[in-house]
Amino acid sequence: MQFRDLKKQYDVLKDDIDREIDEVIASSGFISGKKVKELEEKLAEYVGVKHCITCANGTDALTLALKAWGIGEGDAVFVPDFTFFSSGECPAAEGATVIFVDVCEDTFNVDPDKLEQAITRVKSEGKYTPKVVVAVDLFGLPADYTKIKPLCEKYGLLLLEDGAQGFGGEVNGKKACSFGDISTTSFFPAKPLGCYGDGGAVFTDNDEWAAMIRSLAVHGKSGEDKYNNIRLGLNSRLDTIQAGILLPKLKAFKDHEVDDVNKVARLYNSQLDGTSLKLPVPKDGFLSSWAQYTVILPENVDRTALQSKLKENGIPSMVYYIKPMHLQGAFQNTDSAKSDCPVTERLSKTVLSLPMHPYLDDKTVKFICDTLKANL
Ligand SMILES: *Cc1c(COP(=O)(O)O)cnc(C)c1O
Image: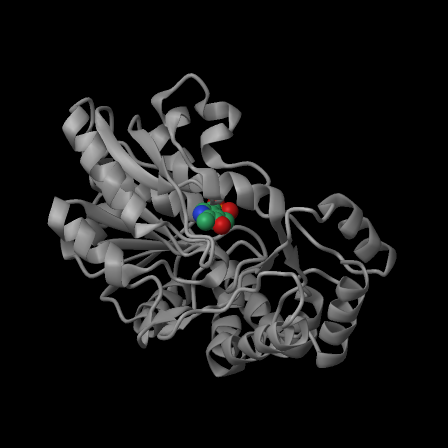
C-alpha cells in the first residue's frame, strides 16, 4: 500500500500524460512556450484570479511574492507554528523576522485570535514593523479567511496565502489560492495537484505585482527582454514537460479527484467515528483538498508503537509535523524562537497522518481503520 499512490493515478492518466511528454520532446521546446501559457491560463481560471505565474517550486513562489513586496530587515512576518519549513524559511531568508503564531487544534490552521494578539504585541513593542501574514492551508484545508482577511485589513497587513497544500480547497464556494493579496502553491509530486518533479505557481489579481514576479522569476528581466536586467531576481521557471504533465492532471483534478478524495475522507471519518481519535472534520462552508488525512491520538497512545503495528500490516503512516517551527534549529537564538505555541507543541506529539489520495478504494480504507482500531 502506498501513502499517496502516484502510480495508480499514472495508470489511469497514462495515455494523456505520455502524449504530452512526447509532444514536448518532439518540439525541443523545453523552457516556457505554449503549454506553460495554456496551463497558467487554466490555473488562473480555475482559481478565479487574474494572473497565474508558474515557477520552479512552492518555496520559490513564496520568495517571489515576498521579493515583489520588498519584504526584508525590520519587517515582522506572521507565520503559523505548525507548518512545513518553507512558510517561515522564505521570509526569514529575505531578512524579515518571523513571528510564529499558534494554531487551532480542530483545523491545524492559524488561530485568528492569537494572530491578532501577536500583531498588537509586535506593534506595541515597536522593534519590528508588522508587514505580512502568511496564512497556510494546512493538509488541504483553507485557513479561516473569513477572520484573517478582516484582520489584515484592520492592521494594514499584506496577506500571503501559502496554498502549497491547499490547492482545490474552498471557503464558501471561493477557491483556495484566491484569498491572498498574493497566493502560492506547489506542484511537488505528493501535493494535491502534483507534477513529476518540482513546480510551483503564484496567483494574484494585481497587475503590477504580477509583472514584477514575471521579471523576478527570470533574473529581473525588463519586460520581455531577457538580457536587460533591471533588478536582481531568480531563475525560477516551470519546465515545459511539467506543464504538459499538469494539463491532463488538472483536468482529472477538476473532473473527479477533489470529489473522490472527499469521499475517502468521509469514509475514514465514518469508520473511525466513536473511537478515541480526534478526527478532521471541515467546518460548514469549508472544503478540503486533503493533502493529508491527519488524526489526533489520545496523549496516552504510544505513537511510534502504533506506527510499527500499522507497518507490520503493510500500512504506511507519517508524522506531519514532528517539530514546531519555533523549535527548529535554524530559528534558535533569534526572536522567532521566543514564540509561545502550546497547541502546536501538543499536536507535534499526537498527530498521525494516514494514507490519502483520490484512488484509495473503500476496502483499503476499511482495512486501515480496522487495523488502527485494533491497536488503539
Ligand atoms: C510543500 C510546501 C511548501 C514548499 O513547496 P516546494 O514545492 O516543496 O518548494 C511550502 N509550504 C507548504 C505549507 C508546503 O507544504
